Image 1 (tube, rainbow, N blue to C red):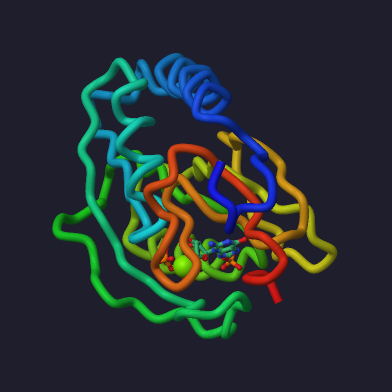
Image 2 (spheres, rainbow, N blue to C red; image 1 turned 180 degrees about the vertical axis):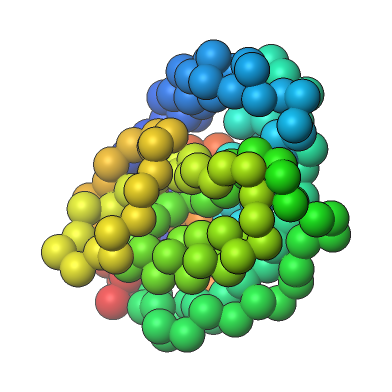
Length: 181
Ligand SMILES: O=P(O)(O)OC[C@H]1O[C@H](OP(=O)(O)OP(=O)(O)O)[C@H](O)[C@@H]1O
Ligand SMILES: Nc1nc2[nH]cnc2c(=O)[nH]1
Ligand SMILES: [Mg+2]
């Protein structure tokens, strides 16, 4: 373990096992929806690594598309303002959308995205989030495919950054206190 990481919450193996379970659940739930088209809408940048593994755990044809939004910038607190930096490349009208996110923290990013994407008339829209933080003041976002609940600390690894570093750690960890203040 690196010395700038305080402790590991979920190991590479924990993550791989959990993603297999989520992939199986999605495969089962969407088996009769594949003909309409299933799109994994990944929220860049943090969601990219989770999506890459989740997509390969789903045994149905799926499209992948990307949106880039940012509410955190380089800090550890949500600015509360979600900006679309990149929109989807294709239409989602009539398709079954699964929004793939690395973490639900305040829930602001996902509530904004769900509202924005629902207005484009998809056949259905659900959320797959690898982590859901246990916080007091979280927007009420429904995520039916959730990987793990995590403590209210600043998390890095497996897509999650601090000042753009740590995204490529294969595990999920809490940043050590010198960084986490
Ligand atoms: O529930 P919330 O409080 O809205 O936080 C969750 C969002 O924050 C992070 O993104 P960030 O804006 O840091 O962009 P990034 O993915 O490029 O790191 C994370 O990837 C989620 O998208
Ligand atoms: N890296 C990181 N990004 C976040 N965005 C919202 N919450 C978090 C968090 O705990 N860690
Ligand atoms: Mg970030």
